[in-house]
Structures are given as structure tokens and as C-alpha cells.
Image: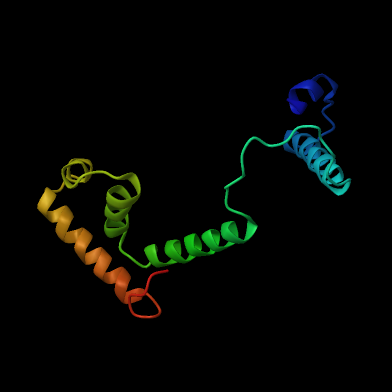
Length: 130
């Protein structure tokens, strides 16, 4: 929205248009940082329920685990990685995965088993959960 409202003031000075957009974004980030530095503001409203969202520590741990998982997945062949993504992450059945990849459902199951076995062998502690 800030870019759209500032667009009429844009003057081409030989610089890339991205520099204009970047400057607006940098100013918006600085505004947010200044607002955070001012500290919390008291409010008359009381939250209706307890916030059960994960805190910063849980988010950091989850991010670290995701990074480790991606590193392990990139050690697999592209086909194994794609099969695991479709079967586990997307939740497709073996038949749906087979149709998407041009394989038989049995071949998908075998490849999935081999990919999971390979992942277990790549775990640093010999198959222990991340």
C-alpha cells in the first residue's frame, strides 16, 4: 500500500525502480522497530483465552529441526525426495503418487521404503528421532 501511495511521487533519476521500493520497505521496517522499542501499551481489554501458540524457543527448535530435515532430504535422490514429499508432506496415497509420477503404486511403496531406510541410516545417532 505504501508503494502505491508513493507512486505518484516517483521520479526516475536513473536508479532502478527496485531502489525506490526498497527505500519504502526499509522505512516501514524502521517504523515497526521504533514502535517495538517504545514498549508495550496498556489496554483495557483482557484476552478471552490463553495464547497456546508456540513461544520463541519452540519456534527456534522447530526451525532447527526443519533445517536438519531438509539437509537430510537433500542427501536423497530427487525421486526419493519427491516420493516422500508427496506421500508424507502432501498426504497423497500410493495410487495418487504413482499417477503423478508415472509409476506403479507398488513401485512407489518400494521406493518410499528405500527412501525411509536411507534417511534412518543418515541420522547421526543411527535412527533416533530428530
